[in-house]
Structure formats: structure tokens, C-alpha cells
Image (tube, rainbow, N blue to C red; front, side):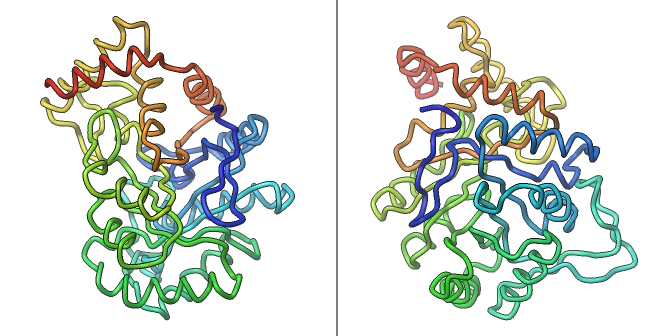
Length: 319
């Protein structure tokens, strides 16, 4: 399967097997220039990538504004776009953000998973994007709001789907337990799972992936590098949006050393690993430059041999 192979993840929604995650467009950890944002989108289209994901959370709206302005120059039927609900952006006088360096300082995030919050969030996202439609909407990070998200946010999104306002709905989180509840208790189409089915963390395979497979819910894997360490396992690397512990660095280094002996780079294996599970239909990968898009495409398409996966599975099970 190539990076630009199209896969149906919901009725009427076909995306490339590799998509572009636009947290970087909000300056996640590192500021991103306008020219680099242009280059990433142009490179994605040149490679046949048609799926882009953003969120109000990313740069407090700056990712949506930047991505929307760039996508407006392409035919609307040439790309699939997802955004998220759960965080409203409200005015503030102190909006500094240490994680998103290109964040809008005039607003702050406010969690809201009510039906009214869903409607307002989607309306605000469309305004920031400058577009008249979003294909997929995810409930974003309801870690401490699962019940209200199921009781209020989900029905509001399901109604929008029934009315044709959005094509598909789902949930996007950095954990697997609450998405598993959504799969079992609602009729969502997609789960965006970040960092929980990777070379370092397979916790999603215990609950979410079997549940999604049984119910026919598509899983998209994000955070395949666990926010950085699986791209470069050195001291000071980031793991799940924080400095990696010595133990995590050592484990990533062990995996990297083993793969190197097999002639396989860590980043290449990290990209391909999630798609080994039949529940996982596609990947989202963040890129800061056209060179990173090119490198990710090359790593995705340079297929890791089954013999290497078998040996790696044995290593991970043993250690």
C-alpha cells in the first residue's frame, strides 16, 4: 500500500493512507514560517496526499487560519479536511502559550462539550478556515468530560451528520479507554488515536483496536513518533509532549539499534508500524517543511520486510 492509496474511512469519505497533521501550523514546539506552511501543502498535493487535519487547539486558531487560507487555493473536492470540537476560543488579555509558539495571544481555550458548544465551535472553525464545509469533525480530548461528550457532543455531531453538514464524526485522543467507550456506546465513524499504537506504546491494541475492528469503526493513527523520540531517540527528546525519561530514551535506543542492524531506520519502522493492525486505516503525520513531507513519503513507501517485523515483535515481547 502506497502513501497515496485511497481508503474509505467512512461512507463517502476517501483519504490518502498518509495525511498531514497540522499541529505544526500552529507552531507546536517550534515556530513555523508562512513559506514553510505553503511548501508543506504544495508538497502534500504533489505527492497525492489529500487529507489534512487541524483543530482550534493548535495555536489557538492559528493552524486553522493558516491551513484554510492555503487550501482555499485548491478545488474543494481535491482534499478532505477534519477539525475538532471541545475547546472554544474566548478573548483574554494574557494568552501566551509555551507549547504553540505561533498561537493567537488574544484568546484562551475553554473546554465545552455541550450541544451549544459543538455548534459554536464548528461555526468558529469554519470562519477561521474561510471555508464553507468541514468533512470530518472529532470530539477532541474529553479526558475529564467523557460523560457530557457522550450525552451532548455526540448527539449534536450525529445530527449534523444526518443533516449532511459534515460527512463523518469521531473522537480524537491521546488515550484509548474513552475512545473505546465511544466505539461501544455511540455510532461514530472514526477514531483518531494519537501515540497509543506505536513502537513504544501498544496500549491501544488491548481495548480500542479490537473494539473498532469488531464494529467497523476506522482508526487513524497519529503521533507515530510519540511526539519526537521515535524520530531521534536522544537525551532531551520529547515523548508524549514532555521530555522523555531516561527509561523511555533507553528503550527507544534499543529498538533503534536493533532496527539499524537489520538495515531499517527507526523513523521508517515507526511510520509503518501502526498500519500492521487491520483496524488502522491511515496515518496522520506532522511536517514542518517540504523536505519532511518528502522524507515521510519515502520512509512510508520503503516497505519493512516481514522478517524484520517478526524479529522486532519477539524483541518487544521479550523486553
